[in-house]
Length: 568
Image (cartoon, rainbow, N blue to C red; front, side, top):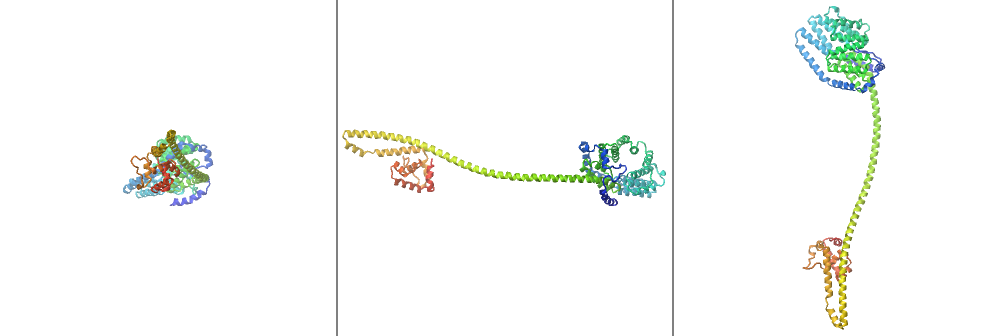
């Protein structure tokens, strides 16, 4: 709660500060430069945008961050197991060891819980009257307070150690390390109110620790790296740090710290790409250990600001969330100076993207308008085409009908021509026969008259049946010829009549008078006078036959004659 209230006061202040107006860094984290100096030291920064290895490392970091809930559950299971063991422990040694383990678990995870378990360690030591245990708890508390930015509280806690020389060697080493942490943080990150602290230089504490640590141990190697860094011997420090990293597991929190120091050394040598990659390696190790108090991700966010603002903003948000969760004082102050420029860059990028989207929206709207106009034009053209197509279809239909009519007319004409040809041949033959008969008759008449047999000739003429015979022959020839052309005429004609009125021919009869009348109509001879002359009947008789048949028709009278013409 204390930190959350401070953070609410901190963020407005941070947002009001310009870039480079605050110099807040924490040991083991180096002081931060202004963007101008950072750009001058890292001339190759913009070239990192196309760095495939960087993209791959960022993808890996994103994956590890996304998997943090799984690792945190494992951490909570481990801490709950320690708490369960602590509740049933009876001896001082067991309870103190378990409480210390819980302190180690909480130190990089939650500041308040760390203080709670440090207080528990002190309570256990007080109950057992163990001065070494009390000293350990106080010194560790002073170290934690120094790392969290509570310098006055740390100084007061460490000042209560009256005689450090009387402490066991391991606790005395811890005591000097706590003083080093306090001196280093005061030197790098003065949050105010620490001017009256009576401390030696951090180099003095480094020298003391190098004497106390066992040479070659990870602690000694780490302090050597720090000593060489502060001495400006960056390449030598990198060599020592490489030796140190080889002794550490790549998934350990100590490995994360070593990677961070490597990034600091690369920064000092102006190696921008290597610096960023080592910061990412440190951040990956931090998240693999479910750590909430870290510096690497902040630095990654800061260095990505000009390369990948989306990742930068996401990482600084994650770092701020973890700093609030950890609930110490120093880390939010460090994040604040990164947050301001990152947020400004992100907002500028967002505004630029928003303007670009607006421009694209206008262009898209114009395209949509043009598309709508185009569709309207196409639709209009389609309507015209459809109308034209309808007209063309109608013309085609009319043309087809005309073609059909022409074809039918041609067929009828051919049929008519065929009929005419047959009848012309028939009647030419008939006419030739009649001429021959007239010649024969003329010869007989002349012969009889030359012999003076006029009476006998007259008698013979009166008794002759030649006219009737010729008429019957004409009918037979006509009937035979007509039925040869229209063999189904009689059946089709009867189909047009009611059942009682249908014509039944006598045996040996081909056509009767009614059928001959309509047979002549089928041949195109419709005039009653012409029909009467051909069939040797009066016009009245022909008319009566027509009326009789039409009255017996099954179809309307006006359609009957047309259907007669279509028989065949």
